[in-house]
Image (cartoon, rainbow, N blue to C red; front, side):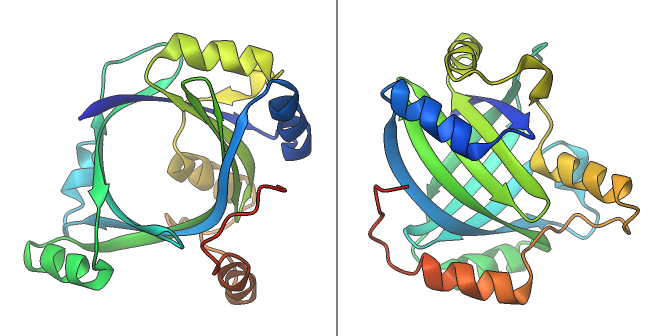
Amino acid sequence: MALEYELKFCGVEHDAVRQALRVAGAKYKSKYFEENLVLDDAGRHLKEQGVLLRLRRTPHGRKLTLKAPGPDTAGAKVRREYEFGVDNFEAALQIFSVLGYEPAFAYEKVREKWEMGNVLVCLDSLPFGEFVELEAGAETELMDVARRLGLPEDAASNATYHALNRRWRSEQGLNESEEFVFSAERRADLLLEFSDERDSTSA
């Protein structure tokens, strides 16, 4: 188990952040399309406790993640995180189904990962917008990298993507939905684009 500190930045141009990362000497890691299933019981008791149980699938593998609330802070979101690889995605779904946990909703995104010291910088493209997410083991490291990349303080948010999706749907006058996935056509293009597990470092 590890504490994970997260801070998102909304409405930030990826091209500008990418250039700032290069100038700062950050290390490009990968770019990929990911599919996520959030699991819960029929009463949504995990959600009530602020717990996320998730199965993730990317071209590079499958992971099971559990995130639980961490210590309160005024800035970054802090979660206790447990994560490990899963060899068989469908078998994992069947096991959780027997235990009473079924897919509650799905979400998708394209993630481009960079490393800057101990901080993971993620350029995320979601069906409802583009974001930058910083992840690290200490809040001070997040704030230092944010300043070095020129990320505006007033664009910072400790909300989850699920909360940001609900806010966006409300602002757009759309029906409430926890799910955020790409259109069938866009999803097919992304699966084709990222089907090769070899990452291009030209991003």
